[in-house]
Length: 248
Image 1: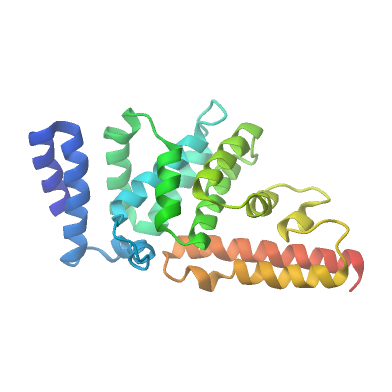
Image 2: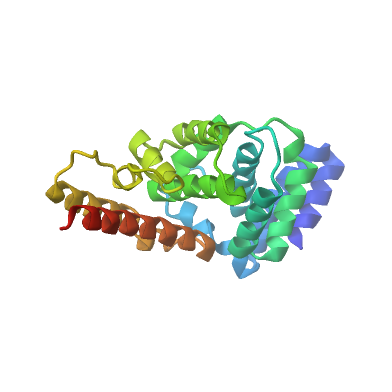
């Protein structure tokens, strides 16, 4: 494949930095000359951004994996369930070969240097749609929840990343509430207070259903669309719960 040949040439000339650049350039050429369909998924996300700077799919995958690694290590231990979740997610989104290639590059190069959540978050904020960034946030919470519990340290790390992504505090609390069961969860998911009237609850549901509707992520890969469907179901469940509680 072109990407690996380019990575080898880059390594011979500029060692590891050259390998990274060569791999990313080779990925672009692979896609241009009819690479695997799994490689075209997130390309659409960035093609629709009217900006002079672009991000290759391979670049996006490495940065997304970098954010995932920060969440996995946030509580001071590496959970096998969380690692397995990330690998399964990447395989579903990009295919086994592409996912394995991304993990190899990450383990060989990216993992050995300090990962900047601020730089990655800022890049995503500049070049991704807001609803796509919400899905990244949901993905990070799903990783933390893979072992059955989202720790406070993981919440803090995801909150930090959320700020870099430019996600509003209310949207952060809404997605967070999808992973915590308490009496106020349904209200938080719909971004309203307990004092909200029945009419305000109905209005909030329509607003959130529109915001989280899976159709907004048709440009993304199937795995991410499934994540969007999960968020949408949580909104529906929250609304139905309040309907039953209040009897309207």
